[in-house]
Image 1 (cartoon, rainbow, N blue to C red):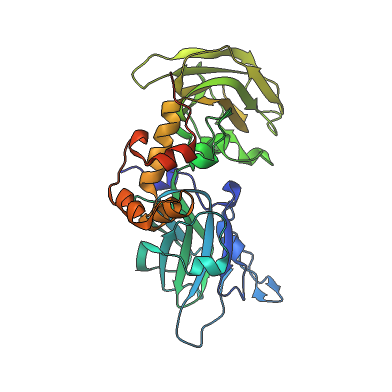
Image 2: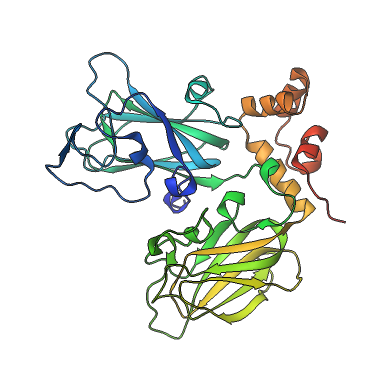
Length: 380
């Protein structure tokens, strides 16, 4: 089975995650849980709260119960695995943990989240100190929030929630959008080398703040070149490519090219011929009108690093419809019913029947109000 830790950390701060609530953070702040950097520790470093820990730590419990923290995923999606890391917590780690998930439309408050329907992702499990514990997850639903519970108290350095992004089609622009963006459902399907950093950084939200927030390969000592392959959010036509070498001053690629194809069994075709690149520069290239494609390959020559890749274009009507159907099929039942009744004025009886009939599988099998709300642009 593929290592789930190779998938994006949906809860990570770099993707927009936030720890929106915790019942206690007396010793160390809850936001440390989702920091992208590995945890660190400096012994005998004390502040007003005691020894400073790079993690989340609660007070010693003197009453029944347990502690918890709620994380809003930066990018909602299907969770494939969770890592609970107790690094440097040796005499103050929790003996057990559990993780739950929920899906809520909009921007709920912490009080509203506490009243939401939560599904088990990781059953209560034993953990130890100063180690990372990986838990595969089998819950094929789209979640927006997770809740980490520790039993009864203690400290956790990091929480990683690895999975696949499932974009909300109601929020996708009807015009041009970044077809490669992780937030829109794009993924990295392969690369030649990720010695220094993951190529998923190339399609992550926002601008890279430092060189370490991009993708960088080892130095090549042969006649080859490095590459990354992307699966787009859906079939579409790419009209503008952005190759960003920001912060790569002495280690940017000398040249780059883009190729594309419509399916995995087809040959690669030129999308952007080989172009010279400059260090620490955002390069934008207009592309000639081309065919509908689903995959794009970036070749860099011979090696080096890049901060971001943006592929601006338009989805086909069929692709937009497929995204809508997948999103609806992955919604937890309660959220799906609430969307149909609250946003599309469907009766509770009709909404329950539609949800019970899932998976829809195809856009044309979705209820008409939902089809209109997702605003697909059908191909001729």
